[in-house]
Length: 105
Length: 252
Image 1 (cartoon, each protein chain N blue to C red):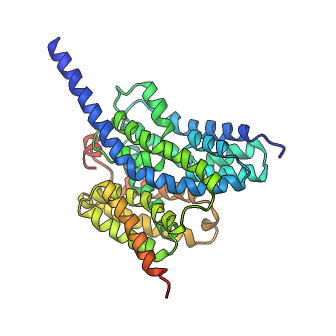
Image 2 (tube, rainbow over the protein chains, first blue to last red):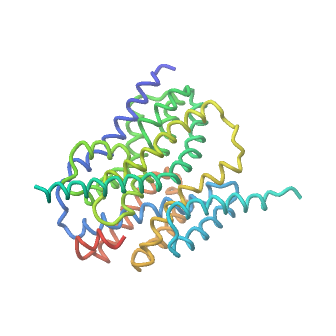
């Protein structure tokens, strides 16, 4: 080890903080340009959707349980379940389906 | 004078309600964070970090992919400049989120709030903040941060110390808590707005394609997320411009 771990950590923190805080502190005005306004309106949904699939299939021990969690999660979120319920239901689906999938024969 | 006082106490109770709601909504984030940071701690351990250093990394950086990428740099004993570049790429999506958040901030939200909230723009806290209609209430965000952020740092430290103690099946189940939360944020607006619904399906399909295609699939997940986010949002903004400011704040 020729490099200091703490210096690495300080660099990680400083670079990440700048990325996060600069737009939030510098953009004080409402963006009037309709294209950018629409662009920023869509960003949250697009970025969360892109991060969810197919990553959810790889988060579990088996892609099947991940897919089941996705389907059940979409259905109950569509029906209006709260954030906490949807999240917990997805965990429960994975836990139960993996109990069955990996049951000793 | 009396009226002013009343208004003040009204915002005060509104803020404490927001704080409580934030705390409640922070619980699934906390669960997911425990699971993810636990596995992150295992990576930190193999990169040679102590439990304290793992704790510090998570308390300061608050980024899963970013920290993972950073730990691989530490493990490789690479130059400091490489750390700067790797972190810039791995965390660039927070720049986009921060821009989007700036448009949901009231002009009255002062600098200290912005400096503090900015530090906690993670996929999850960002998702929670924008899931509520209207301007972002810092109290709501603080509620979710207070519950979940400590779990992230503590989970990392436990991961460094306890490696493989938690049964795999439990980790596996907790891992989807964060994705369940994302679904709860994007699905209800999709029900009201057909453009968002179609967009989500397109996102799923193109994200899946990007994970398989040659060259693109070699990029890190963070970089793929940025490319797809910019491309899809730009096309959507071009084809389906959002009419008014009020609309952006109220139909979530």
